[in-house]
Length: 149
Image (spheres, rainbow, N blue to C red):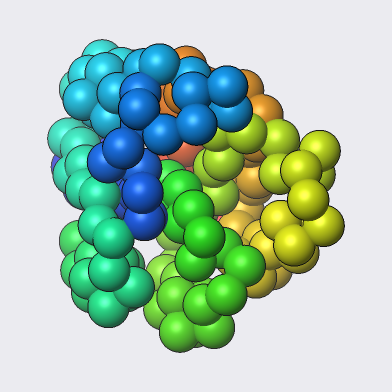
């Protein structure tokens, strides 16, 4: 049953610098704050929460999620716009995927407007700030419960 499978919350490059990196864009909350909010929002759902600056590691995390996860919440950061390999890995996942961005990428420079990940994501959330993560977790639990992809 999907409820026994964890939600995978995967974070890409530079998100370990939240709270210190461009706070005018990303705010002052840390990734540790985000993890706590996500675990609280998930309630009884188990959560696997990861961050990596490595494209290879992020793809390996997606591969693990393919076998283990009920749903994926992913903030691929810069890999959103560059990684065909990440897109190919996500396409193998049969459950719901939410692509999440702290900033509204569509209000930023044009290079941030074309997401490769969006072509396979069930839903996209952007511009809610770091405090939007728990909303995305709750949305993911609903998608999983509805059996959505």
